[in-house]
Length: 375
Image 1 (cartoon, rainbow, N blue to C red):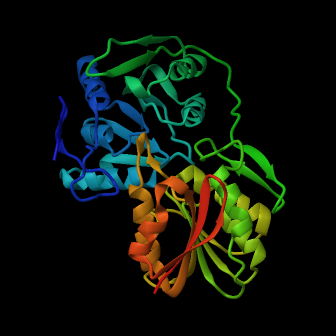
Image 2: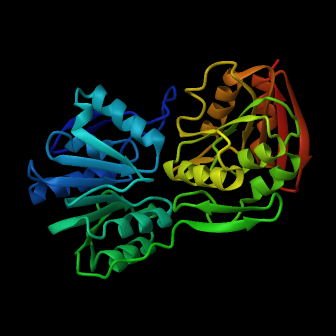
Image 3: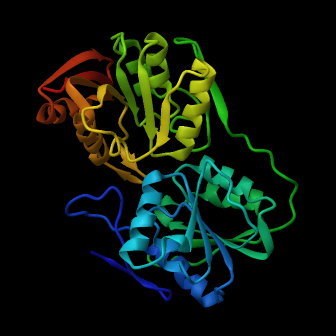
């Protein structure tokens, strides 16, 4: 297991979710570069540090106990990794305060350390929220691997913080230094909203929601084929995003009990608002989580899922396969998992390995809708 060695600590770090023979490490050269810079600049024990988008807690764990550290991000798995990595390295869990991206981190902060996220809308919202939260003399430093560091990230830093200077590249990583200057309070363009014709819904989407500006084409293919089973069923929308699949199903089945779960706090925040707008006070369990890991075994009759095919910048079907396994464990015998997926991903064969029967219930030129029944 690769060890993160920095001037602050020597840490054994893991990613989340864990997998056997993990090919990827929980930190990169941008984390190492940022920590070296912090040490050179003389981080003080009383400094208040805000860390944004620390994927698996590498930065916050390195600084725990050496400053007053707040970590904020939009990933439940990221928070889980932070907690596990603190414990794994004998560090106190209360050495870092975690604030979900759906909430506001309270300053003032002496340092803001930003790992530039894949979704620039999330970065924009985070920078907007820094207004009024920066201490005099604050230092704002963004970091990323060059291949994942678009010019637009620097433009956002300049717009909301101040002039930006780029450091020389080290091990294909780069730092961006933003010098704060007085600016009027910005107005956030988030959340955004779009309208669906069928079912007739207005869906709001916070900054980090997948396909924030319009319904994604996979969900569009899925909606006409949603199961029409009626009755008192326990149903989960797994990886719910803004909640559209679960809400559409609930509108067609007034007796169903719904669970909507996503690892993005902003997705859950969006889904909660959309559920209340569409269904009023009808109860539902809308939560951030590691998929169905916390769902009791054999507690669901139906699972709806439009599975993800990436985690941050890493593309693959590892998360989808894990969600299928979680769904099987959570379903009663005879329960069904309904998914939509790109044809080329071959989910039909994967599902056959887990479930007794798999049937195609719909298709478009790009997508298939599959029903897998637990034997």
